[in-house]
Image 1: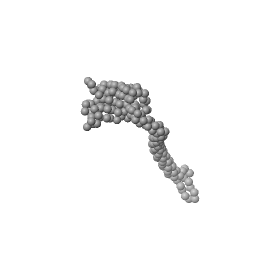
Image 2: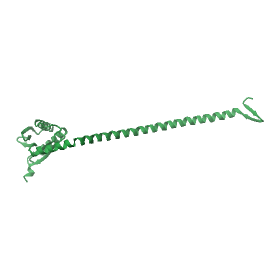
Image 3: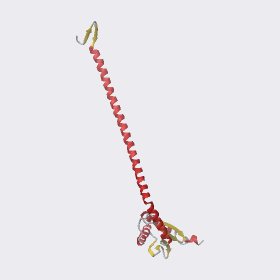
Image 4: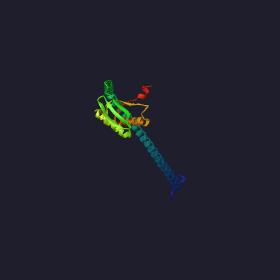
Length: 194
């Protein structure tokens, strides 16, 4: 019959019909492949977005965990800090105070005292040397880096050079980097005399 089918007087050409069916089948397969590609791309985008969101949540969780640990540590140490502060105030009342005294002979110098006497002395040239001298004086006084230390810088504003006071002030800030509870008050004796 050669591609023709005859049934009760109707002639159907099967070759043309098969061509149309194959074209439609090919078109459906192409659409399914494109749909699969689009679905895969959308799934990859959603997975990447979910992964990014997960990383943000992890970072936030790490931050919150660190804050919680810091607050927990602070709460655990609050009684100890209060006791240390009270002891420092009691020591202050009893004259246990570190005194930094700027004075002049031929040049400016810093003398460090406590109630037991002189702990150290240095020329006012280098902020690093001043810092080292103060820290050595604190060690000489058997003070530890976590102790609460009350200090007073005494200078005569009418005779002390501004740069010398500034250098000692900077050195005191450097000491605070090592001794976190180092507190220093500044007394200008020239203002007292007015």
